[in-house]
Length: 197
Image (cartoon, rainbow, N blue to C red; front, top):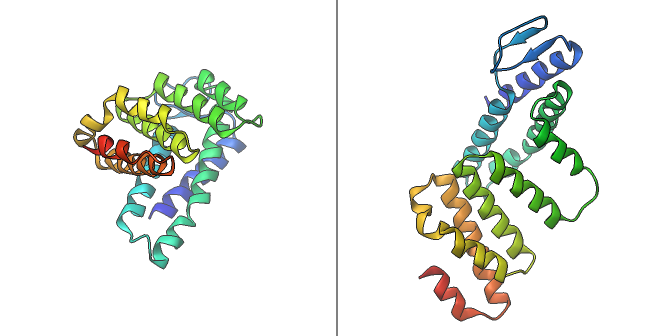
């Protein structure tokens, strides 16, 4: 079902590419061009959420999980097509201008800083919390401990995460685990206890 939905959205985007007089928009009434009511970004986010949930339901040690992961490139292609369409029609100019600058070679830290800043500026609270957790996770994967620890303590995510959705709780558990591993690698075993209790 997920694959069929992605394939249908790709067909829609190909039609939109071939016929520039057709637009998809949920905020305006049709004028001279043919306007189909809808929101491609919302569709993309829904597909991403469904893909993520399907991965959560599958045992990661099975062949089925590996096969499901092979669907991810199809989602990446779809996301690229949506981005190109929105750029072509001039939607979300500020956001996509920042994304265009990302095409220049940069290190992953710079990329994370830009993406997190965009999310903090435009997203809802749940997405901001996930961005914070992803930022913490990125820092600790690069053996930085002090900055992600400070981010975690200043954000009070640890105290509030049990009120958030399951997906955000999973992100939190992963970030906390990696933070503990990073502290362990740096020989700060006593700090690990303080982080969890």
